[in-house]
Length: 500
Image (cartoon, rainbow, N blue to C red; front, side, top):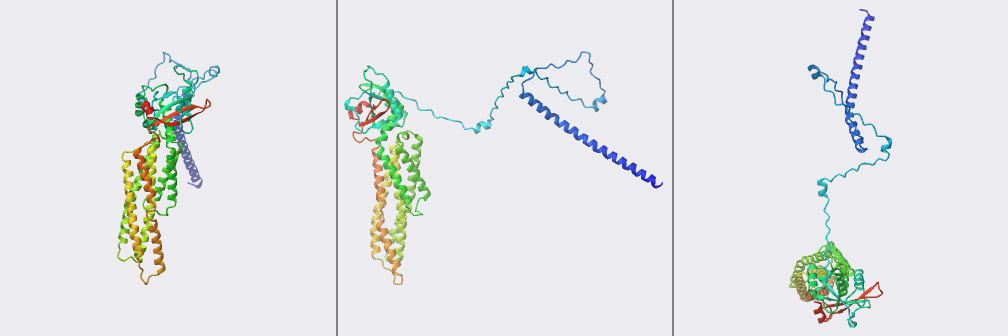
């Protein structure tokens, strides 16, 4: 075999190899195309179904019926086992309707999807508290005589009372009167004023039932809504001075707290500051809008919480104060009162004075909150006992401090320093000790006085009119047809009995 034959053999082999390689690549490419085509068919079917669902439903097209002479093809067993059954034919899309039939297409309404049970659980149910039912006859309205005019200053009517006055003036009376009534008198008993202002349903119904037999010359009645507004305005006038005092007291306590040293003893500074700010805000709100807040349960509950925190702070301060006072008494009875005892007494008295300043602030806050709760009608069963316990503790502290001051002043007067100790430092400590002894117990008497006043007010109760203590005669008078005024005077005992 020569070289030429060998070359032809190599060329033929290489050609065969190239042909085999090309056939393999082509077969793999065709397989991939078939796979992509089979995967695109369901997607196309989904798109077609979605498009069909969004468009108008086409007119139904009847499928062609095969002829009766058609014969089903017969297949052998071998063909059946080797050839898979043909896929079901895909129906051709229905022809589009004519242009005039779809000139104004109307999209079909899509029903909203119902929320899942889990989503419904996540949505909190909304509950609105229904307003209390209105009671039509609560306070009787009379035509006042000439001597029934109120004695106090003129009080502008609130919008609800102005509407009630307009309704009273517009309603005809029996027997008819030629003159349009411009003045109306309502007797408000003191015992029921707070319950009516707070819309206490049980007591309001009791008051309405007691007035089923109206007094002389009744012309109309105030319903529960107008009666609550009238009682709230009257109580706001009665409590105005006390509310101003409570708000001013809280403002003064905040100033006293700002003047405390950086690290007060006892209650944490941040907690005491937050308590004073919150209590002061409640006192200001009650002073500015008592008539609107006396019937709000949420406001009264917040005031109760602030009062409870003030009482808790006072309980935390009592034990450390007793411990420091015991240490000072032990130090004052030392046989030799020298420079060490002077310096130790000065440090303890400095701490004791700062602690008493905090005590005075907390105790006065307790008394102010007791006043505010009393004006809002929140009388707790044990409030008198709590205030009485605080008053007794303060009196005992003032007495102990007076005895302690006398003993320490006597010990300081006989103090002797060692010869080897510098006289300047010793005399400076003695001067500081004498100053602290002069200031000992200076903050507690004012706090004791306010607690005693609060306890006495709780004993008397609220409201308590200054004169007869029976209630008020409220005279509503129209001024210029659109505005009106309110005047008050204390009820006489006979008028109070008639009102009841």
